[in-house]
Length: 446
Ligand SMILES: Cc1cc2nc3c(=O)[nH]c(=O)nc-3n(C[C@H](O)[C@H](O)[C@H](O)COP(=O)(O)OP(=O)(O)OC[C@H]3O[C@@H](n4cnc5c(N)ncnc54)[C@H](O)[C@@H]3O)c2cc1C
Ligand SMILES: NC(=O)c1ccc[n+]([C@@H]2O[C@H](COP(=O)([O-])OP(=O)(O)OC[C@H]3O[C@@H](n4cnc5c(N)ncnc54)[C@H](O)[C@@H]3O)[C@@H](O)[C@H]2O)c1
Image (cartoon, rainbow, N blue to C red; front, top):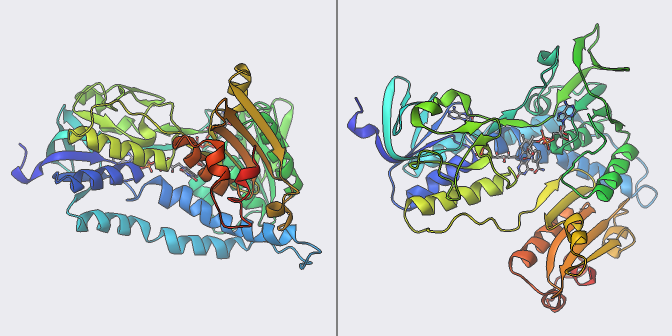
């Protein structure tokens, strides 16, 4: 039996960036909305993902600035004090769950804490109460995957790493994706000996290979040691730490972090009761982000999708689904060009079409690959490497780019605007930017 006040226009499952953006967007359209969260309000990004990671990276950035100016005003390179910066990070993260929950409640959205399970196509049960809605939006995100090997219980996750109370002398990351590169850079800035063990020789495989090779060299310069083509088959507890085992390879460390990808949170929702199909890549949807049950939508990282699993993409999908639910949208979702970034020092960023794609149609595209290291912007701060590979179409419109530098985050965002606004190169050239800045360099990219 559903209590009368347990009836909603929409119930959102998951209180992360996707779910909260969904709830706010529906509430703004006067819908009666509830959100159910089973762990930390705010979700992965502010509690154990993007934001705490970027706070820890503040230490890397400060240290790098000084390291790059050795003999040019500075003569010592400080290590980042891990316990201090980790405590600083907590001053931010500790406030997130309550702040996120209070935020929706004060906007008039119902916040429900608990473990929801579908009991029919339009009802869920949470804490022995039944809730009913015209529409559900599933936004339960992902969690770290665990390698299926002996001793995998000895592996730390990215969350465990960011919450360490002290940084060990020697730490190893398995996997060479976003998380391993970023967290390894953070660990090495504290003076730890850092290793990355990867099962093939193509780290960050979605990025331009020549720029990834350059980034690997920069991480090696920091002292990070890469071990490629190593298929880890066991983690053993040793007297003082852990041993990573592979055929003809063994590596002792104080701690080992598994960073081999993330898997969708789909198992505990009894989705079969609501006729919602999913697999290990996530929940399947049509072009309107409707699941196999047309009254139930899925957004954010839990989606099985081609678009990158990132916070701003989750927000974009949330606003899109809100517009579908309120009836102001009749088109399938169309994602704009979306930048993706590996943070650290230098940062590696990309947007739009890649050089590999452009090379397949040489008559349609021009690839301009430039070493910017000696450009004033980078010379001034003593950057070790700065590069830009920009793809133009026949109309001199920017259609893609890969950037490697400490300013790549800023530059890629400018180029994203240029791509999505279909700006011709001349329009960029004729824009007056503040000088000297990465923006005022844009006119030299062709
Ligand atoms: C270490 C790390 C660094 C990252 N860095 C970046 C970055 O720099 N930039 C970027 O754009 N993205 C980054 N990401 C990715 C980003 O965090 C995600 O894309 C984003 O959080 C997705 O939002 P979401 O709401 O879909 O999922 P989540 O943020 O995972 O939120 C899902 C919510 O649902 C809840 N939930 C799960 N199961 C249930 C259930 N059964 N019932 C109720 N609630 C449930 C979870 O507790 C969580 O609160 C990073 C991720 C990690 C792990
Ligand atoms: N800056 C950012 O935007 C950012 C940062 C961190 C995470 N994220 C998000 O989180 C997701 C997960 O990050 P991630 O780094 O865990 O995943 P990932 O998919 O980026 O990388 C996982 C890596 O592990 C490797 N791998 C898989 N199995 C392995 C094995 N058996 N042994 C060794 N290596 C193995 C893969 O080849 C890959 O290189 C990202 O895809 C992204 O959506 C984004």
